[in-house]
Image (tube, rainbow, N blue to C red):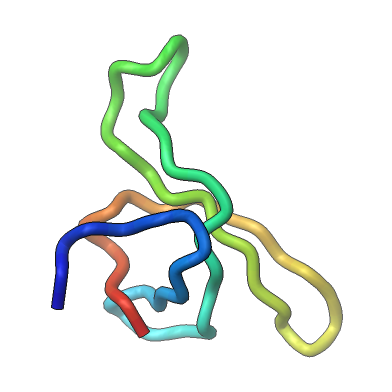
Length: 61
């Protein structure tokens, strides 16, 4: 598995969960400078959900 993530990639949490699509990748925190997070979107059967996750917490699906 590549450790590289790109917008549009399908990922899952390493701990399990639904397939998600990366919509944005950026540094977290005020004015950046924090850890890099992937902002993801997924559908849970009832509606569209979004969340942000640190890169070490996700893997390609």
